[in-house]
Image 1 (tube, rainbow, N blue to C red):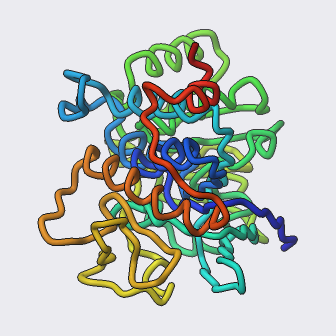
Image 2 (image 1 turned 180 degrees about the vertical axis):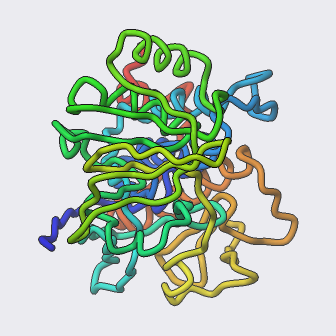
Length: 342
């Protein structure tokens, strides 16, 4: 596995709301950031678990969906050009002479002066279909996320699931695959109505298939499938010829490798100093649901507050030669130039 090595100012583990807002607060202080997330898109729980669920406690926004909040945060941080490493898990944290090195399970290596852990309750781990020996097919013909759409070009693809990920990728990949069949246990979906409508139109136009059933097994050899098997409501079975399976059965939360980073833990959360949200390890911070302190509330707005104070301390590690002077975004011309505000 070839390694890609990057150098930046700050590494943010987790691209949920707290991690995304951290990009903004760091960016205001001329701090560049790379983000690592096991999901294939930004937003964390907001994007994956409740994209359409209304959120009522974001200041100045009476109500906003998880999907819309993520989109707004992405727009807000766009001027700071963050670099994202999606579908990757931060696997190893190593101390260097002048900072830190994080290595992901994809072999990506990022070096920076500070690390910000914003991984929520832990890493999202895909729920797998209950099929014997499925592990031997994973990464070759069975996948749980999409890193590069081009990897599925000209494939005979089956997508299993009924949420946003399943339908969004069905719609996105349909133009480049050889054939596509969406499989779900019922003719009702948890995805956005717009995505459902688009999918049904593709089916009506004969550009993809939709089959009701439960994924029960597959046939293949040498780690490559050639057929998936479905069990139907009437206890009959259906076989679908294919060479690739994308299974979107949801996600579970696991603390993952963060527990092995050598940072002090308390009940699977990370104690922090509330002055600056630094952990027991100098130069490593924790914000959002993953951090703990007396009175901690697991709220998105709490993560925003934590990101702001974290950035002030991170500045001293990254720009020790510069004297930091606190500036309000409403009055600082230099900050307004960065944001493109006149």
